[in-house]
Image (cartoon, rainbow, N blue to C red):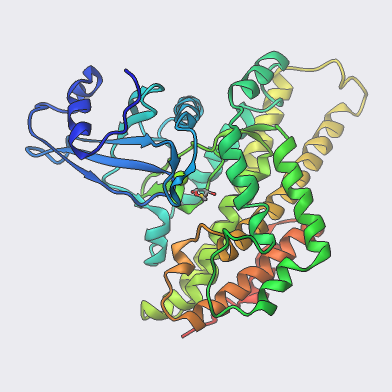
Amino acid sequence: MAYEQLNETTVIEYIRGLPEVKSVFSDLSDLHVREIGDGNLNYVYIITSNKDPNETVVLKQAVPFLRIVGESWPLPKERMTFEIMALETEERYCPGLVPKVYHASHEMSLVVMQNLKDHAVLRGEMNQGKVFPKLAEDISTFMARTLFYTSDRFLDHRTKKEEVKKYINIDLCKITEDFVFSHPFYRSDTNVYNEKLSQADIDLVQKDGELKIRQAEMKYIFMTRAEALLHGDLHTGSIMANADETYIIDPEFAFFGPIGFDVGLYIGNSFLAYLAHAHRQVLLGNEPVEYRTWILGMIRDTWNLFAQKFERLWAEHHSANPEPFWDQPTAEQDHAEYRKRSLARIFEDTLGVAGSAMIRRTLGLAKVSDIADIEDLDSRARIDRMALEMGKELIINRNRYDGIDPVISLATSISPADQAIG
Ligand code: SR1
Ligand code: MG
């Protein structure tokens, strides 16, 4: 079927023509549709039976432009192909952590999948101060398994390179290269920020030579280090959760890049939530310390569990598949040291990306509601400045942190957990 951009009427006709959804809907004649439209790139429709609200699916379609900007910014709709392929790979390694796919069409640039109606987007839930006890466990499992099983630590040389070739995601990588790694760091026309930030606040980022060098290095790492299949946009808006379950959605930015990119994006966004709750908890009528301490603990656990799980998968695979290269008497401890140093390098990338994420969400085009929805612009500016300070430190000094605890200490030195911004 040739590509056609669907609308609320034609979506229903499309769904009715799919044999795969007969397992979901007992009666395809009585459906209603709602476009939820809260993303930057695509159109997302929820289709539900009028007879039984449990009979429901989501249809996500890419359009040939960047939705956040409009039709003046073309963007190939073929990006959906990467999302379809990544959802399959993630399902293989992390069943139960990604939505079930009922139907996918490369021609129509769309996917029909499980409606996670008992779950909500994590960012919005965290904005309301909700706690997710399983989050660190689930996200660390997702990251460790998808990133290990698609890396050269696991795949043979041919499969890995063929996979890299399949995921040459030029246009969405360019969005990240521009909007995450470049534009927020100079006076780009695309930048949008809180009017209460002064030029001096912005110049602390945009006119710092050392920061520019360290940020240019981060961009180069992103562009050249094809380590593993990344989700590519793993922030709290790409996760749906409830108290018991976590689902990772929206992998259209998938490509082979540096492992620290996925981990760093998630951790950077979590630190933004931490900073935002100095104000949000006050609005919710709470002392900030309890919820903010939970966020910090979740960040600590996420990194530590990710590192343990990734290292364990690698050690087990190495033991089961001995390589002739490691034939010296001290091979076992040497390989353990090699794994340790590799994880330290992933951690360094993680911090550089976390810092980039914090700065891009403060000065760049695409915001996070955690901070951008704060109505009091003076309160928001105090938090914006903290995000810029922490982001800058993480980018410049990313090689000086030997574990997540000193990074948590950095966050609490910039904004103590009991700080209330009224
Ligand atoms: C200009 S598009 C901005 C962002 O939307 C997506 O969610 C990605 O984070 C991308 O960087
Ligand atoms: Mg997305």
